[in-house]
Image: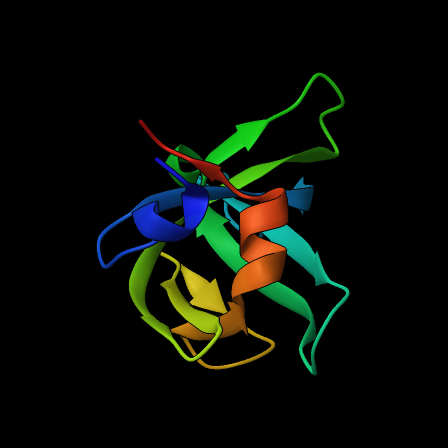
Length: 104
């Protein structure tokens, strides 16, 4: 099954991000670089259970859920507080398909 056909409402996608300590011990401050489109970066505080650190603790993946795909873009919902834009966040579908890992 192609990634395109699996990006439907309710799909869990893990997206690469930069990690820093959050204000509270139960959260991480995340930064997701979106090099295409108008967004630039997504910044927010995400619960630790929605973050998977890599071998390098300053990088990892953050959990998002597809709300809906629309016209070459995808609306994603993140748990926690997104500071840089509203939640849900709209990202280019092509970018998400290239960097995201769909949860099995």
